[in-house]
Image (cartoon, rainbow, N blue to C red; front, side):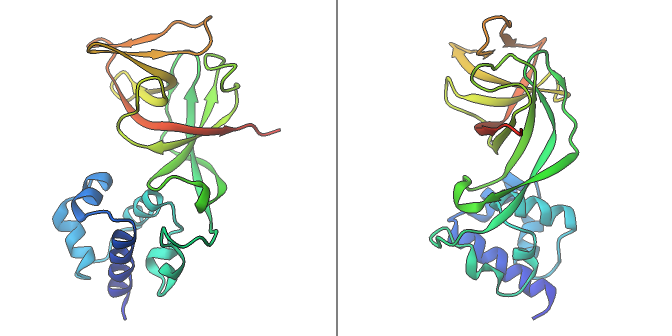
Length: 209
């Protein structure tokens, strides 16, 4: 098989094993449905950035997509532990929001069996607004998703996606409030002057000694 066929077969198996439709994946990756269909039909081969996005979405190494027979190890029903590298993406503010740099600032090795399915990444908490729940300097594992339940902690990009903050999401009627766990800090109310969008749910944190 050529590279196109190998990639197409691996991606088809990923979709089947994880019960994800083509439409769901195209939306999650922000690619055209026809582009995804071309990959799955082995008509074209994706660029490296697209391969990275797919690997991050399924929490697998890129090699599992481009090497033959790799997917013998990654079915959800397969309990073998696989170590993958989860990217650390910039910093995240835990006090006043700071600019969210969209570059990878290192990686953390994780076992796939301990990760939620889908795209995961780490953000570094800077500030005291979420203490004592999450200490300053923690690496916070974020599962990429567009919404969270009321009261859950989320990474939120604020002010036209130029800033990010980690806060507890509270909803009151039609108002979304980003609440700090530290009472010394003020909540952020999302409105027309302070628009924002949830980029993921905080799963857990680690502190490097």
